[in-house]
Image (tube, rainbow, N blue to C red; front, side, top):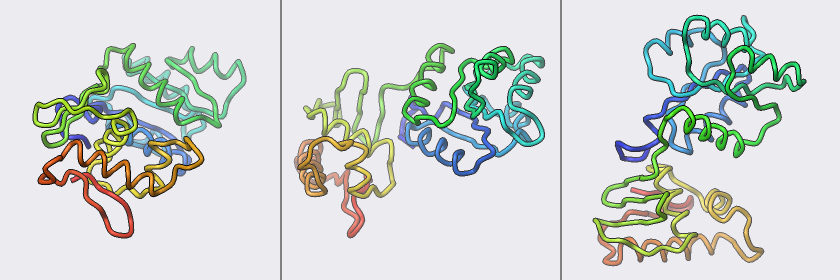
Length: 232
């Protein structure tokens, strides 16, 4: 996670989904955004977890073992639990969606779903519920402000291009992870341009390193031979 007292890692999200591959997909995308995520394959032990942890949001499937998801939420609401809930379900009839909201859901998405749309809905729910999503990310003496689109290194502002800014952001939210060039192409360039390739990644990283470490003494970004790059 990002080294900061003001970051998404302080925001705990619970995901209840009985299909393990879907659960892992949701956990991956939420974790990539910096959230602290706890996944469950059923509702077992969830209430105990809610009693022990400060949870900001729950994402819940309706087709769960032992108890239907909307019934579980209705039970939580009857006990006074007011944590926001997004239903993520294959039940897509108008009556199903209405039932989800009436049981205490705050939002409803049907499967198949777009991970990007889910993240947007998560942010909207958190914003409406008063949970602040941090705009400032810190790594060592680098401070990245996503709201102001500014980067400072040791208190000195550094001018980055939009692409370099996004590249640095991607490294910070994946701190200590080795990122291969294919991942960076997908995440930062997102298929833009026919002439973009892995050499483009190397060139962009060299430029970024020169801007944030002109004396080449801090080694923020290191090469991992045969794999890619890692932020240290």
